Length: 126
Ligand SMILES: [Zn+2]
Ligand SMILES: [Zn+2]
Image (cartoon, rainbow, N blue to C red; front, side, top):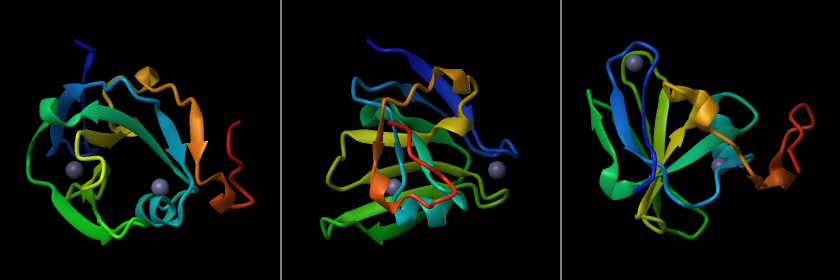
């Protein structure tokens, strides 16, 4: 069994926990992540979906991903903090935004995805 982590939003309404999945942590520079976070990229930490549990009401926004299948972004309806992302295609994982962790230092990204979409003011890591 992997490491269980906890986190939540800025205002404390949303709290979550889950087990870190054995899959690479990454940062994503796609335009969806830019728009959803208001920054140059998102910092995503994968959790095992069946261990993910959250309390407090989140709002989920559904999008159509590049594969034509659904992806969802969840955020706190009160303070607006982005909480997690999930997709139909990778439904065994829930990705949480690393800065929402209680111990954000557990996040160690090893790759960038969609680096070509990076803004000139936000360069990808190798
Ligand atoms: Zn909140
Ligand atoms: Zn992205």
